[in-house]
Length: 87
Image (cartoon, rainbow, N blue to C red; front, side, top):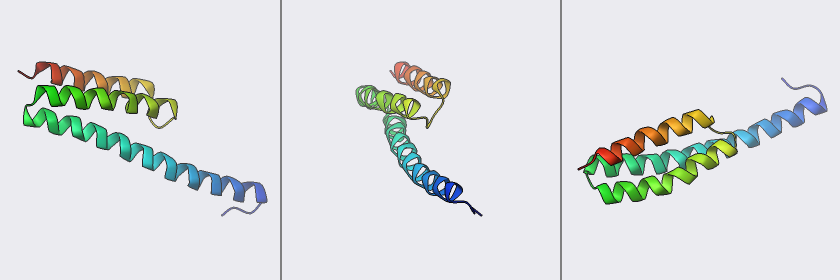
């Protein structure tokens, strides 16, 4: 339990940051799910559009510290190859 005023403030800041990061992660997952659904439906044009929308969101998550750069790059690469393989 936080005792000093500094540790109480840090606890408040951590909770606020947690809520912000949670919202960012949820938003990114929504964009990724849209790509997955478009791939599952087999619509290449829709999947490509969804991927174009998801890429900046993923990179924004990297700059905000929600995801590691390599994690986001790996996700984008795998999704792009799956979209490309759609006939």
